[in-house]
Image (cartoon, rainbow, N blue to C red; front, side, top):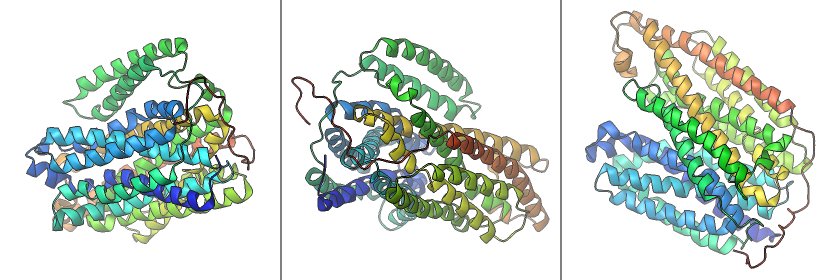
Length: 497
């Protein structure tokens, strides 16, 4: 469907607004966690405020992607936005942690639909050539939310009250809803109206079990539950294969996995998840301990990373939209990020903080060169009937990579630090503030332990990006088309949604 330039701009503004809401709601809550859990009297379960949101946003991706292909992305998008706003309202009024976690799960469901349908709608109303530029604009919501979210959350918690962390979504979301209803066209559903209910249920349960297994495996108390979840996920995957082989319209169509371009993009999405998210999650800890800085100063390094990513993503999107050529950017981007992480591993202890900031900015620039671009490329390789499914699968692979990568890196760091600390020192109770109160010699010893622990971690993450270079080299050469996506074959008795 071709839109006027004005309507397309309004549409992109609406999609960017709701994408930012979904991304911001994950980061803005982080600085309010302790306050929220303390006032609700459940500090020991506060992690579920974040985990519930993330799990729901992850496991629902394939289901919502398939629904978007069947009924049309507009309906799924509007329902997801309304769900997100209602859940935000309920979060602020939650009387206890159970209510809050349930509302956060509902928020996560809405957030998944917003992110996924924003990307799918852009794919339906633009040519493949235009798509990288608009994908980069919408994708800017994530790095901006990483930078802005914790600061906004802290200010709201300090000067208002924690319910406003959730209620601030309402006015922005209502404006975005009005824009969306006005600007999002009535895009028809696909040519396969059946929905794979058994496959959806088994897939969702298996993925949930897998994510819980990865999340819990590092906790001694939860390890038996993690093993049980891993076994359940394995059984579920085998059952899913049997179900999908017989399904008339499988939730993950096998045909999308037979295309080389799609497979390469899925591999690159896994690299982003396992590489970038692990870096952003643990670099602040490294800087606080190895450089003996405050939490505020340690945030400068991940900020440099995401700002580099933002600039690179926008520039790459613009360049690819001009030329249509895309193969060079994933190759150069993964190579630059790998070299940056090798440099991080080789940096000597005690070097000025601006040096790792510059190096991590280069890692961000390399990652940003293909983070959003791969969505435009993977959508150009899929049929219009599979746009939602292929976009959901690309997002899902990234989320799984992030979950597995952060869990593995966190486990390695925890074990290695505990083994390297001086005798009698408990790694579980060691905080940056406690370290800064210790004698200078002991501070230097602990800083060296963290430096030596993180060096092989950075090399391991560099190896992940090096695998990305190999994967990117397998990407077929091509040029994105200037033609609009071909409409799906009509289905008797179905009307556009």
